[in-house]
Image 1 (cartoon, rainbow, N blue to C red):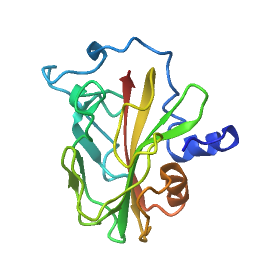
Image 2 (cartoon, one colour; image 1 turned 90 degrees about the horizontal axis):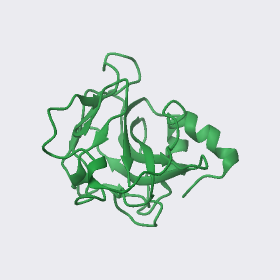
Image 3 (cartoon, rainbow, N blue to C red; image 1 turned 135 degrees about the horizontal axis):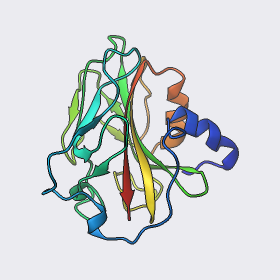
Image 4 (cartoon, rainbow, N blue to C red; image 1 turned 90 degrees about the vertical axis):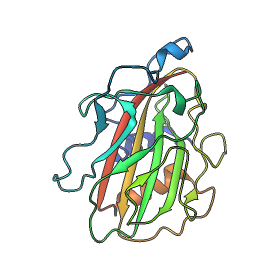
Length: 203
């Protein structure tokens, strides 16, 4: 599900990874590189203020950091733990929203963009996802290992991940196993608003 280099520049601009930098040199894989549950109280990562037009206030208690700098993710939600999706919360969205598209992507050392998780079919009345759970009618796309699931066990080294929530004015009618990156790029042109969280994860 990676993109060829000619598409990468457009992909990074559309998915906001262009401002996030790429991957960093590989680091030794240890649980010490991931925030533990006993770490001091975090500054919850979130987007810019919800009153800014086109932005959704997306946040998660599983992510440590600030609005201006990417943080880390609790070990439970990584390959060092249970590798389940983190809890997410978001605020008000445009009234015209018909569906949410949620994509977790990362950029590799070659500049190619990859999918770690993608979920379509999320209802406009929804404002949160519990850890490791999705609504019954949610449609899950394929990640870069061809799995229809969330996973941070796909790439070795230290990568910056982007969690992107898009409010769409139409229904995607996506099928299980849909192409996450392609769908996200197409949806960007019509998205009413977006929420973004970025974090580092070394493996």
